[in-house]
Image (cartoon, rainbow, N blue to C red; front, side, top):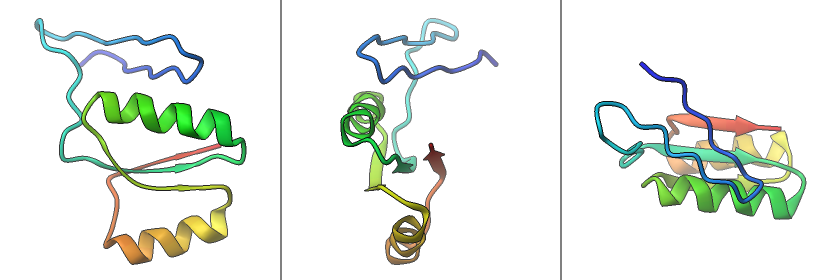
Length: 79
């Protein structure tokens, strides 16, 4: 399986495997980032691949509450 890189600096890398674009449909993501601009950029990039953003939090404490409220996540991206 190819490595997957998502860049929040405005550079989009679609990793292709067997001619298919990366599909994150149905995957629930939580983004934990204290820099608002970076966090929003990461959320937009993930959504462009079909991901569902369950939450965008600035700290671990609020992210734990978001996980509990959401019923679970598939992936957390933590800075």
